[in-house]
Image 1 (cartoon, rainbow, N blue to C red):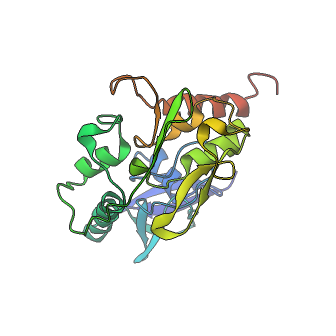
Image 2 (cartoon, rainbow, N blue to C red):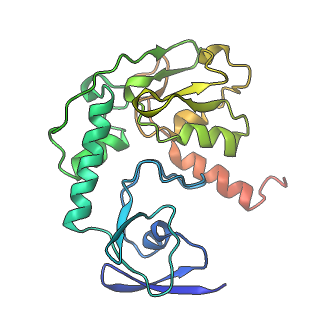
Length: 236
């Protein structure tokens, strides 16, 4: 396998042929924040939190392949400011109230806000009217917490193979939907596997009837499923 050599934050690192900057950085022990990326799912570059500077240009590291001689910066003041701005816009776009959220303490959006020092939002809150879909007997959907990372859409399509989830609407009116915008509990394609709930980075998808402490997103389990399939553990 061909190997590419590039410079990451001033240090020379190697990347496998076709590997993205994000995964090359992870292999080198350099963390780049993300929200839409999840191991095992196709990267889409939706959240833009993984922006890095390549020769002075801003590019999403999750969908940009490492190239020979590339000079990459992952933690400049400019990048930190853009990441703070992206987080603030996500908070302003929906109704994220951590104190009453089922994912409080197990939320990647909350974790990143603390990591990047986001203690206030400089933008006007949109306060959109967002519904809560409690039609499913095991799970719930709270659009107030959704950041449109589309992890649920991709995990349902690419790992479960059901493609129950999709995105409807445009701009700030975009919403994740099940089937043709049917209530989740009436979906004819949902297998109730719960992979979408495991993949969700916030409290948008949750287990009904469970306490905050019990609503833990088990994302490592998804990684185990993907790895098991790749290694053919089940002979399929």
